[in-house]
Length: 107
Image (cartoon, rainbow, N blue to C red; front, side):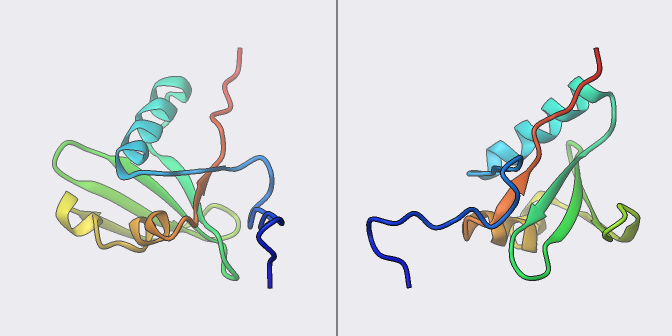
């Protein structure tokens, strides 16, 4: 049990940042694509399983890849935006459990 004066520890490593809104997911994906030249962005759902997904945002479809611990694709889903709104990535966002790493660029 946590007392009011205590902060809950972050569920993931300190280098990950919490995603706070659906519009932020789209922005973070596009930011990553522009800065790295690679499609999509990896998001982590905190919790016991620490599920990892790569999300690619296209105008009419959202591609969601479930990744294993090595980064290999386990499963791919192509979802229209209204279906993405019920995906576990968005559910984790609503629950405050969605994280992503800052973009790493090479200069």
